[in-house]
Length: 91
Image 1 (cartoon, rainbow, N blue to C red):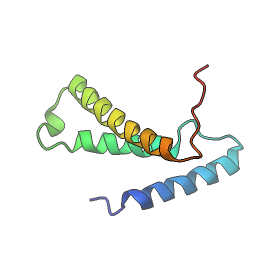
Image 2: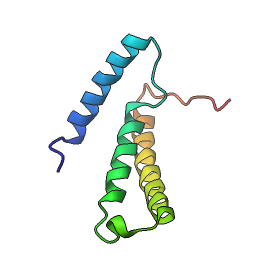
Image 3: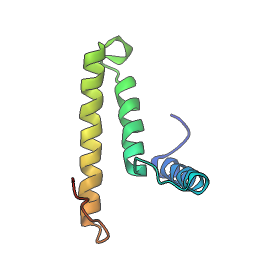
Image 4: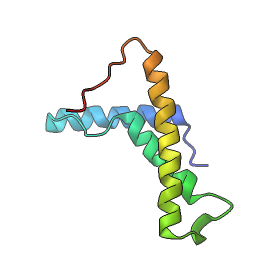
């Protein structure tokens, strides 16, 4: 629908991140995968055919959170299988 598939969207986001890091010298707070999950969750929730724009704020954010958690869980599982994946300490 947006003329951009997930891979090209992710690639463009990675390039923008590199450009931003080069300018500021500071890494971003979110990983690219998290940005993609955030955008995908927003789009899925906004374009839901059953409720669409007529849903309440609370329902919108509940659906958004559900989509985001599902996507992030998939990304995390995929990354766990990657040998380069390391868990970050929580403290």
